[in-house]
Image (cartoon, rainbow, N blue to C red; front, side, top):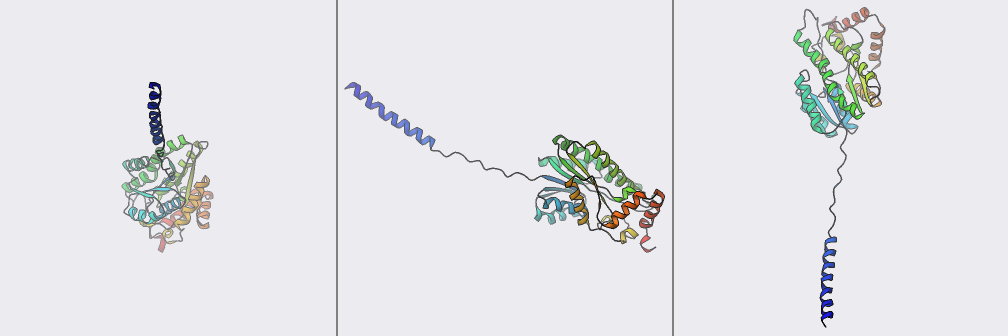
Length: 298
Protein backbone atom coordinates (compact mmCIF):
# COMPACT_ATOMS: atom_id res chain seq x y z
CA UNK A 1 0.00 0.00 0.00
CA UNK A 2 2.84 2.38 0.78
CA UNK A 3 4.39 1.92 -2.67
CA UNK A 4 1.21 2.75 -4.58
CA UNK A 5 0.66 5.90 -2.47
CA UNK A 6 4.15 7.16 -3.36
CA UNK A 7 3.55 6.65 -7.09
CA UNK A 8 0.22 8.42 -6.98
CA UNK A 9 1.72 11.46 -5.27
CA UNK A 10 4.39 11.88 -7.97
CA UNK A 11 2.03 12.02 -10.98
CA UNK A 12 0.29 15.35 -10.17
CA UNK A 13 3.69 16.99 -9.63
CA UNK A 14 4.78 16.05 -13.17
CA UNK A 15 1.54 17.33 -14.65
CA UNK A 16 1.90 20.68 -12.86
CA UNK A 17 5.45 21.07 -14.11
CA UNK A 18 4.31 20.33 -17.65
CA UNK A 19 1.61 22.97 -17.40
CA UNK A 20 4.16 25.49 -16.15
CA UNK A 21 6.49 24.84 -19.08
CA UNK A 22 3.64 25.04 -21.57
CA UNK A 23 2.48 28.38 -20.18
CA UNK A 24 6.00 29.85 -20.39
CA UNK A 25 6.55 28.73 -23.99
CA UNK A 26 3.26 30.24 -25.08
CA UNK A 27 4.49 33.84 -24.61
CA UNK A 28 4.77 35.62 -27.99
CA UNK A 29 8.26 36.66 -29.12
CA UNK A 30 8.95 40.40 -29.11
CA UNK A 31 8.92 41.97 -32.56
CA UNK A 32 11.46 44.67 -33.46
CA UNK A 33 10.35 47.14 -36.10
CA UNK A 34 12.82 47.41 -38.99
CA UNK A 35 14.14 50.95 -39.41
CA UNK A 36 13.86 52.42 -42.89
CA UNK A 37 17.30 53.17 -44.35
CA UNK A 38 18.19 56.87 -44.21
CA UNK A 39 18.67 58.73 -47.45
CA UNK A 40 22.12 59.86 -48.58
CA UNK A 41 23.21 63.30 -47.36
CA UNK A 42 24.18 66.24 -49.57
CA UNK A 43 25.29 69.78 -48.72
CA UNK A 44 24.96 72.92 -50.85
CA UNK A 45 26.70 76.18 -49.93
CA UNK A 46 25.18 79.36 -51.29
CA UNK A 47 21.90 77.44 -51.27
CA UNK A 48 19.52 80.32 -50.63
CA UNK A 49 19.16 81.44 -54.26
CA UNK A 50 20.43 81.13 -57.80
CA UNK A 51 22.49 78.12 -58.86
CA UNK A 52 22.80 76.84 -55.28
CA UNK A 53 19.04 76.82 -54.74
CA UNK A 54 18.54 74.92 -57.99
CA UNK A 55 21.23 72.40 -57.02
CA UNK A 56 19.44 71.81 -53.70
CA UNK A 57 16.21 71.11 -55.61
CA UNK A 58 17.99 68.57 -57.80
CA UNK A 59 19.46 66.75 -54.81
CA UNK A 60 16.03 66.55 -53.17
CA UNK A 61 14.37 65.34 -56.38
CA UNK A 62 17.04 62.63 -56.61
CA UNK A 63 16.25 61.28 -53.14
CA UNK A 64 18.89 63.02 -51.04
CA UNK A 65 18.42 64.75 -47.72
CA UNK A 66 19.99 68.21 -48.00
CA UNK A 67 21.72 70.78 -45.82
CA UNK A 68 21.72 74.25 -47.37
CA UNK A 69 24.05 76.95 -46.06
CA UNK A 70 24.13 80.70 -46.61
CA UNK A 71 24.54 83.89 -44.60
CA UNK A 72 21.70 85.99 -45.99
CA UNK A 73 18.11 86.50 -44.90
CA UNK A 74 16.78 84.51 -47.85
CA UNK A 75 17.91 81.21 -46.34
CA UNK A 76 14.76 80.61 -44.28
CA UNK A 77 12.54 81.31 -47.27
CA UNK A 78 14.61 78.95 -49.41
CA UNK A 79 14.17 76.17 -46.84
CA UNK A 80 10.42 76.81 -46.81
CA UNK A 81 10.21 76.58 -50.60
CA UNK A 82 12.30 73.40 -50.71
CA UNK A 83 10.56 71.62 -47.82
CA UNK A 84 7.70 70.11 -49.91
CA UNK A 85 10.32 68.26 -51.98
CA UNK A 86 12.02 66.46 -49.09
CA UNK A 87 14.05 66.76 -45.93
CA UNK A 88 16.06 69.99 -45.95
CA UNK A 89 17.94 71.67 -43.11
CA UNK A 90 19.15 75.27 -43.23
CA UNK A 91 22.37 76.36 -41.54
CA UNK A 92 22.94 80.11 -41.41
CA UNK A 93 26.68 80.76 -41.55
CA UNK A 94 29.08 83.36 -42.89
CA UNK A 95 31.55 81.21 -44.78
CA UNK A 96 33.86 84.19 -45.28
CA UNK A 97 34.81 83.59 -41.64
CA UNK A 98 36.70 80.56 -40.33
CA UNK A 99 34.09 80.18 -37.58
CA UNK A 100 31.37 79.91 -40.24
CA UNK A 101 33.13 77.05 -42.03
CA UNK A 102 33.61 75.23 -38.72
CA UNK A 103 29.96 75.75 -37.80
CA UNK A 104 28.79 74.22 -41.08
CA UNK A 105 31.14 71.26 -40.70
CA UNK A 106 29.86 70.72 -37.14
CA UNK A 107 26.30 70.58 -38.51
CA UNK A 108 27.38 67.99 -41.09
CA UNK A 109 29.05 65.86 -38.41
CA UNK A 110 26.08 66.22 -36.04
CA UNK A 111 23.81 64.62 -38.63
CA UNK A 112 25.59 61.32 -38.02
CA UNK A 113 25.58 60.14 -41.63
CA UNK A 114 28.52 60.04 -43.99
CA UNK A 115 28.49 62.89 -46.48
CA UNK A 116 27.76 61.55 -49.95
CA UNK A 117 27.93 64.77 -51.96
CA UNK A 118 28.69 68.45 -51.52
CA UNK A 119 28.32 71.42 -53.87
CA UNK A 120 30.84 74.08 -52.80
CA UNK A 121 29.04 76.85 -54.58
CA UNK A 122 29.05 80.01 -52.42
CA UNK A 123 30.74 83.01 -53.98
CA UNK A 124 30.48 86.75 -54.56
CA UNK A 125 31.94 89.33 -56.93
CA UNK A 126 33.01 92.98 -56.92
CA UNK A 127 33.15 95.44 -59.79
CA UNK A 128 35.19 98.56 -60.43
CA UNK A 129 38.67 99.95 -60.93
CA UNK A 130 40.81 98.01 -58.44
CA UNK A 131 43.15 100.89 -57.55
CA UNK A 132 40.78 103.85 -57.67
CA UNK A 133 37.32 102.49 -56.83
CA UNK A 134 37.27 99.29 -54.83
CA UNK A 135 37.59 98.97 -51.06
CA UNK A 136 40.27 96.55 -49.94
CA UNK A 137 38.04 95.12 -47.21
CA UNK A 138 35.51 93.99 -49.82
CA UNK A 139 38.27 92.43 -51.93
CA UNK A 140 39.68 90.52 -48.96
CA UNK A 141 36.21 89.40 -47.85
CA UNK A 142 35.63 88.07 -51.37
CA UNK A 143 38.92 86.17 -51.31
CA UNK A 144 37.95 84.75 -47.91
CA UNK A 145 34.68 83.40 -49.29
CA UNK A 146 35.63 82.41 -52.83
CA UNK A 147 39.06 80.97 -52.04
CA UNK A 148 39.78 80.44 -48.35
CA UNK A 149 36.43 78.90 -47.41
CA UNK A 150 36.58 76.68 -50.50
CA UNK A 151 39.95 75.28 -49.45
CA UNK A 152 38.98 75.00 -45.78
CA UNK A 153 35.67 73.21 -46.39
CA UNK A 154 37.22 70.90 -48.98
CA UNK A 155 39.94 69.94 -46.50
CA UNK A 156 37.36 69.14 -43.81
CA UNK A 157 35.01 67.01 -45.90
CA UNK A 158 37.34 65.21 -48.28
CA UNK A 159 39.23 63.28 -45.60
CA UNK A 160 36.23 61.18 -44.58
CA UNK A 161 35.18 60.70 -48.21
CA UNK A 162 38.59 59.34 -49.12
CA UNK A 163 38.56 57.00 -46.10
CA UNK A 164 35.20 55.63 -47.25
CA UNK A 165 36.37 55.43 -50.86
CA UNK A 166 33.22 57.22 -51.94
CA UNK A 167 31.98 60.78 -52.49
CA UNK A 168 31.13 63.48 -55.02
CA UNK A 169 32.24 67.12 -54.88
CA UNK A 170 31.03 69.85 -57.21
CA UNK A 171 32.96 73.14 -57.17
CA UNK A 172 31.41 76.20 -58.80
CA UNK A 173 34.07 78.11 -60.69
CA UNK A 174 33.30 80.24 -63.77
CA UNK A 175 34.37 80.80 -67.36
CA UNK A 176 35.89 83.93 -65.77
CA UNK A 177 38.68 81.61 -64.62
CA UNK A 178 39.98 81.34 -68.17
CA UNK A 179 41.10 84.95 -68.77
CA UNK A 180 42.05 88.21 -67.04
CA UNK A 181 39.08 90.36 -65.99
CA UNK A 182 39.56 94.13 -65.86
CA UNK A 183 37.10 95.83 -63.47
CA UNK A 184 36.60 92.42 -61.85
CA UNK A 185 40.29 91.66 -61.41
CA UNK A 186 40.12 90.01 -58.00
CA UNK A 187 36.96 88.06 -58.76
CA UNK A 188 38.41 86.59 -61.95
CA UNK A 189 41.55 85.65 -60.05
CA UNK A 190 39.55 83.85 -57.34
CA UNK A 191 37.82 81.75 -59.97
CA UNK A 192 41.13 80.97 -61.66
CA UNK A 193 42.28 79.71 -58.27
CA UNK A 194 39.22 77.45 -57.90
CA UNK A 195 39.73 75.94 -61.36
CA UNK A 196 43.43 75.31 -60.75
CA UNK A 197 42.75 73.92 -57.27
CA UNK A 198 40.11 71.48 -58.50
CA UNK A 199 42.27 70.30 -61.42
CA UNK A 200 45.03 69.45 -58.96
CA UNK A 201 42.69 67.73 -56.47
CA UNK A 202 41.19 65.64 -59.25
CA UNK A 203 44.60 64.29 -60.15
CA UNK A 204 45.54 63.57 -56.53
CA UNK A 205 42.27 61.73 -55.87
CA UNK A 206 41.95 59.89 -59.19
CA UNK A 207 42.17 56.43 -57.59
CA UNK A 208 40.30 57.23 -54.38
CA UNK A 209 36.67 56.69 -55.40
CA UNK A 210 35.97 60.41 -54.83
CA UNK A 211 35.06 62.50 -57.87
CA UNK A 212 35.85 66.20 -58.33
CA UNK A 213 33.73 68.12 -60.83
CA UNK A 214 34.17 71.79 -61.77
CA UNK A 215 31.11 73.76 -62.87
CA UNK A 216 32.00 76.73 -65.10
CA UNK A 217 28.98 78.94 -65.75
CA UNK A 218 28.86 81.99 -67.97
CA UNK A 219 26.64 84.97 -67.16
CA UNK A 220 23.65 83.60 -65.23
CA UNK A 221 20.38 85.23 -64.11
CA UNK A 222 21.04 85.40 -60.37
CA UNK A 223 21.56 88.01 -57.62
CA UNK A 224 25.28 88.05 -58.45
CA UNK A 225 25.23 91.24 -60.53
CA UNK A 226 23.09 93.17 -58.05
CA UNK A 227 25.26 92.14 -55.09
CA UNK A 228 28.41 93.09 -57.02
CA UNK A 229 26.95 96.52 -57.80
CA UNK A 230 27.35 96.03 -61.53
CA UNK A 231 23.83 96.32 -62.90
CA UNK A 232 24.98 99.15 -65.18
CA UNK A 233 27.47 96.93 -67.04
CA UNK A 234 27.05 95.40 -70.48
CA UNK A 235 27.38 91.87 -69.15
CA UNK A 236 24.67 92.41 -66.54
CA UNK A 237 22.28 93.83 -69.14
CA UNK A 238 23.05 91.17 -71.74
CA UNK A 239 21.56 87.71 -72.24
CA UNK A 240 22.04 85.33 -69.32
CA UNK A 241 21.52 81.65 -68.66
CA UNK A 242 18.74 80.27 -66.47
CA UNK A 243 20.24 79.09 -63.14
CA UNK A 244 18.08 75.94 -63.32
CA UNK A 245 19.78 74.96 -66.61
CA UNK A 246 23.23 75.71 -65.22
CA UNK A 247 22.55 73.69 -62.07
CA UNK A 248 21.21 70.75 -64.11
CA UNK A 249 24.37 70.70 -66.23
CA UNK A 250 26.52 70.75 -63.09
CA UNK A 251 24.47 68.15 -61.23
CA UNK A 252 24.45 65.72 -64.17
CA UNK A 253 28.20 66.17 -64.65
CA UNK A 254 28.84 65.51 -60.96
CA UNK A 255 26.70 62.37 -60.94
CA UNK A 256 28.49 61.11 -64.04
CA UNK A 257 31.92 61.85 -62.53
CA UNK A 258 32.75 64.31 -65.33
CA UNK A 259 35.83 66.46 -64.75
CA UNK A 260 34.37 69.84 -65.72
CA UNK A 261 31.42 71.36 -67.52
CA UNK A 262 30.89 74.77 -69.15
CA UNK A 263 27.25 75.76 -68.67
CA UNK A 264 24.85 76.28 -70.20
CA UNK A 265 24.16 78.16 -73.42
CA UNK A 266 26.08 78.18 -76.67
CA UNK A 267 27.00 81.81 -75.91
CA UNK A 268 28.70 80.73 -72.68
CA UNK A 269 30.49 77.89 -74.44
CA UNK A 270 31.73 80.18 -77.23
CA UNK A 271 32.89 82.78 -74.70
CA UNK A 272 34.80 80.07 -72.84
CA UNK A 273 36.42 78.93 -76.08
CA UNK A 274 37.43 82.49 -76.98
CA UNK A 275 38.94 83.08 -73.54
CA UNK A 276 40.99 79.89 -73.90
CA UNK A 277 42.46 80.62 -77.33
CA UNK A 278 42.79 84.43 -77.48
CA UNK A 279 45.99 86.17 -76.32
CA UNK A 280 45.63 87.42 -72.75
CA UNK A 281 45.76 91.08 -73.78
CA UNK A 282 42.94 90.73 -76.29
CA UNK A 283 40.84 88.64 -73.89
CA UNK A 284 41.35 91.32 -71.22
CA UNK A 285 40.17 94.07 -73.61
CA UNK A 286 37.05 92.08 -74.45
CA UNK A 287 36.37 91.52 -70.74
CA UNK A 288 36.81 95.21 -70.00
CA UNK A 289 34.21 96.15 -72.60
CA UNK A 290 31.70 93.88 -70.85
CA UNK A 291 32.49 94.67 -67.20
CA UNK A 292 33.46 98.34 -67.11
CA UNK A 293 31.06 100.33 -64.91
CA UNK A 294 28.55 102.16 -67.12
CA UNK A 295 29.29 99.97 -70.16
CA UNK A 296 25.62 99.09 -70.57
CA UNK A 297 25.01 102.55 -72.05
CA UNK A 298 28.34 103.10 -73.80
